[in-house]
Length: 307
Image (tube, rainbow, N blue to C red; front, side):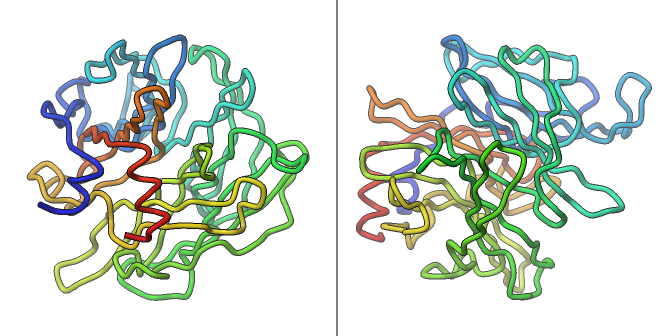
């Protein structure tokens, strides 16, 4: 039994969302995830076979999928926003959404907000290229908003010295600075040697828990896996624990084969403190969406023991 199967267990109905669930989709993947009004909300990334949606050239759109049981989802056919790989953070009564905007100027982060997942309001461009994955903390720390960044992108299969995690802070969610290094790619875990990426941190009594993805290279190509780190509640620049082993890796057929093989990738996680559970909705081979669940306390313990 692989260690990741001890902490995170795949749902028996995986993959829970497939391209056939959305007419014209060639891939459904990498959802932002949160809870709203007692329902599980996924912001699913839909890649369209023709590059068109409703007659318009869009390439990819993000749609709201909601569920009462966390497994069976109803997808809104109307686009919520354009793009992919959204990260959702609830701060007070507002849900803030960051998604990467690719284009001729590079890839940079766009900030949106919503209160009902029906209307999405653009706020501001909040990062320079290349920084596609800013992930917001759910509350201020020492009077400032905080986020985890990956300011630069490593080229596939080539070590460039970038692909590391940084912290930054802001007085208003729009103007960011006070940049601090957080974690190097591959530090203590060779399975993330090319680059690592963040998700919105989760507050626990032990510290800020953050699910990460890591990318490694071999003669067989790139492989994406998931891990976790634990940051100090008062000073997130202090990493107080991390999993040295990955907690989920591509082994199932739907994770190994697809548009991009050998990939498990997530944009977040949902904690259930009363059940001592964490749910991770993840993209599988950039083609479909799976669900893995595990014990929140066991994951924290694995970080602290660096298992």
